[in-house]
Length: 124
Image (cartoon, rainbow, N blue to C red; front, side, top):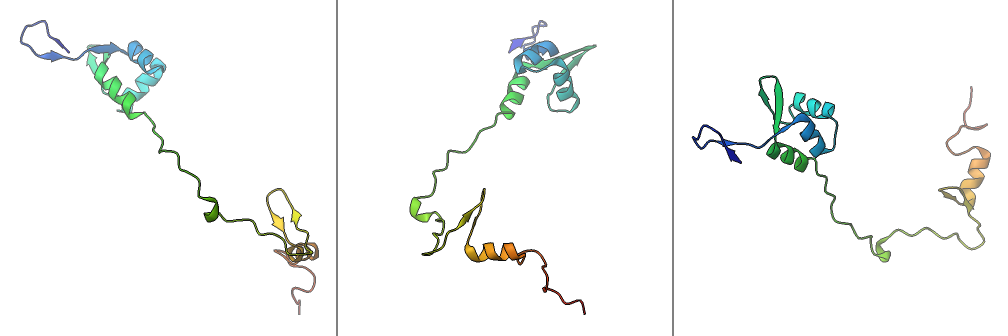
């Protein structure tokens, strides 16, 4: 930080214009104005000029940083659920994401799963 020109030793923060702040954040000047209006980026108003402290831009940038947790190792093979193998003499039907056994397939063909087929209800 620099000291002011009056010689009283008061610290004056290093200031950036809106354009310089936008360049540092690699965003548009409109975005910097929006951040200022939303109260997310502190600023100084000197007469009609808006100035942003370098430290405030750095703090905002640090707050925007996204960190991800460490990579999670997959479960050991013995702890994973294994797909059930068809019993002897059964041929499973493979769809895009689902394996259907012969009993479920026959129910689907007859309309007995999730639908009301003939004979499921009595109208009387």
